[in-house]
Image (cartoon, rainbow, N blue to C red):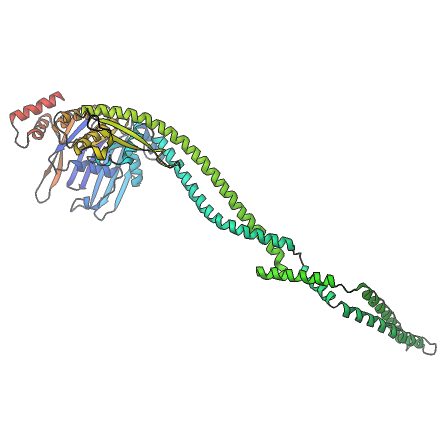
Length: 549
């Protein structure tokens, strides 16, 4: 619970420090005295956004510190322990705001983010503002209120997280599917190109072999004629060379001086014989092959044409075929990824549906109980003829939704026999204020925060209804710490302690907070009953109200 609140340099407050106790605390004062400033300052400690204009004129900064007893607050102590913050009996939230607009937050002396302060603040205090009935007209507020009352906070987190995962998968699927349309066209082209290349089947070093074969076949007739002429010439030259060898071998020519000559002539004769034999064999191996020449020319033409089509050299076609196969395999992998995403989406959607069905069942049960409790409260608030209902409206789209499978709308009928309609269309301002109060009081049944603050939630009511409101708030104070800012004497009289907010000064006004004694409470309740002029009857009425409380 909230033990102490210290404020310095905030709005019309110079310096203020107040100790608070269990039960119900009433906070009253004239309009404009600054009753809500204390609660606004507390809101800054638990993560509210800061306005530099809130720094008191002439002050260098605003400094606010709120001390809470967390010895019995297990969730808060776990939260603190998980972040290596002191989780013993007391927790201090501090917020400073400079006149230049710089803001700092601290938890137990350690720097903290506003998000951290807000997370911890939800475990420490629950603030119901005087404008709660305005937000109550919005479906998100209604849905949140029902989910909290039904105990579905953990389940709605699971539903929301699963829906978010599904949406991430859907976005990735849409992105990949868009690429897949382009990829399908590319795959079709690649498949055609690969088939074309595989049909042609280019081989390594094939071009060199084909060009050599083409040269041979294209000149076959000329080569054969030349080979025959060479063979004939070798034969003629052999006869002449044989006669020369015979002359050199004559005994009359033999000497050491002619020995080398004879060897050269004999070697030439042998080489000429080999040349003749080689030329004859070559000539015999050749034949005119028009069909082979045509096939070779067609093959060369096909390779050159396909190479020009792909803008590569003919001898690079084999490497191109390998590259196209690699790209096609990569695109096929994209299709497999798309299938995997589709399966993941289906599995996530199934998980969401299971969670959403559980949440729907919980909401249906909670709606019945909440409606009954609100009707009981409305009866006590002089609206017993009203019918309050909660509609669960299924979403038309079956895709996973962070909100669950349905939206929530609060319905009210203020006239007997009339069909319930949305709050915004049916309830008047005064009725809406009382409905809001009933909902807030009922919601407090399941509140997990040990401190609840009600800031002028009793606006627009009075008389016996205000008496009931005071009783309801005092009832809450029996199990939780309740702080109530009020203009209703019937409500203020129910408090276990009573603070009076006053504004003093002319040129430089400031607000003060005073813990009232019994006599002071009589005077303040009397003022709230009869105005600034206190009569004995008014004071007697005030004493009676306090004694009855």
